[in-house]
Picture: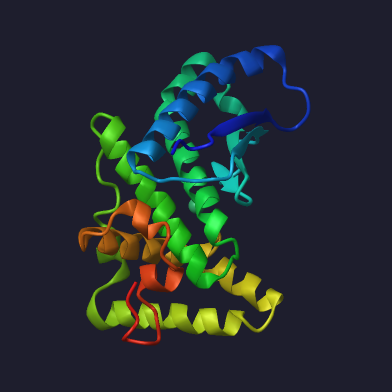
Length: 234
Ligand SMILES: [Zn+2]
């Protein structure tokens, strides 16, 4: 069955005509390539996507953000809105769309934000970038080979996962606690260890022979292998 596809909207009030002209063609091409990449991963989704393009300041750290199963945003720094400049960021733009699309598709099934789900969805989003890049971009490198070294091995890695587990438990208390824990694990101003851990676990599930599109359907606990019961298999 064919995926419903992406509609494009322009955020932040009327765009200057020449700005829009510079960005539009790149956005259309990048979107087409990103959709092709998602198809190549055999990922199916049901909810049509609405992608809003925003002009952002130079210091904005996020290339994009996904809100729910329908909506996600792409941020174009104003200083990139020049013909050559935007063309030189075409690959990044494509990968950002793939990344945010993956989050949005994942939300169709798992919409709730929590420590486990956020780690799983970040792992999936970064790995989808990596898999699509290796298919469609020349000279792409597997970006995440080093991530497991960075996270430590054996008991070090186990204790990191235990910390994630504890964090998940305490964050169930209330929303304020959840936000504190989410910041610690995922914010660019925090450690981002939750992102790295998610990437590492998704990498591992893939190397065990699982298909990416199947992992998209797995509960976070199964992806992260943090289930309390050792008899549970997905
Ligand atoms: Zn992400």
